[in-house]
Image 1: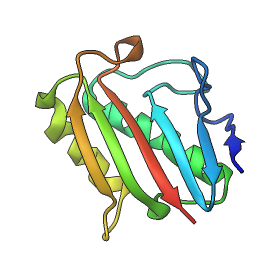
Image 2 (image 1 turned 60 degrees about the horizontal axis):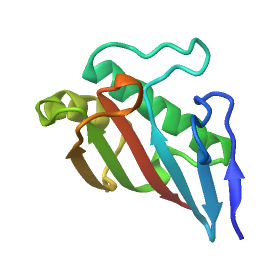
Image 3 (image 1 turned 90 degrees about the vertical axis):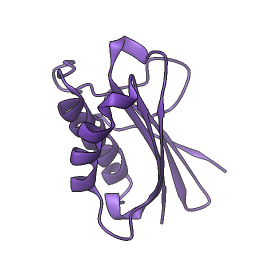
Image 4 (image 1 turned 180 degrees about the vertical axis):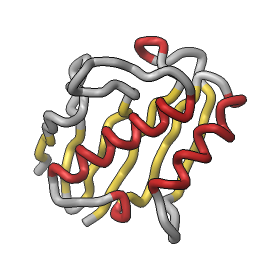
Length: 124
């Protein structure tokens, strides 16, 4: 059985998908663009966008009483691998050892011209 998670503090889905799905004690958070749900604004720069994407992830997890410490896997999508160091600087603030497993990939383009998008899996 799966349950859709909807959080007002994170931007809503912009297509036929859920912000997150919970099933069998796991929460799968869809890729979070760096959009502030309150203002609809996307900040400029990789550091600011990483921070906003991770804040969106954090809000979704809080909706189901989880924290960033419950994240076991992340995938970071970057518009360019040259942004890796900037992303990593902010990313490291949000996670503590033992750090989640992570993949970071450069993609041709991200929705809405974003520089960063982050998805994750958390476990209860």
